[in-house]
Image (cartoon, rainbow, N blue to C red):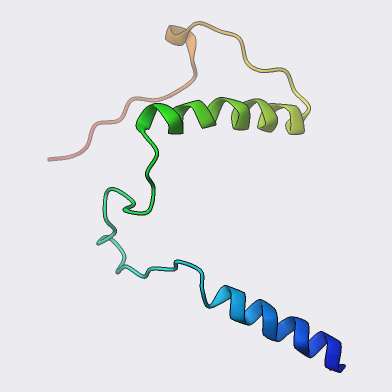
Length: 79
């Protein structure tokens, strides 16, 4: 590896070591992310632009039907 590539890799490693990474056992994750200070309304507002972009990238028009006609399946959890 040339010296410049090694230096770049070292800088990337150093920056990555500062990322706020947390580890949880599977099934023991907190219900709320303590680092996320956004409200439910703010998070929902972020969804619409992402959904529009996804439909656009897929190259198909956004589905247009009434809620009662939406595809889906109701399943009940066993007790």
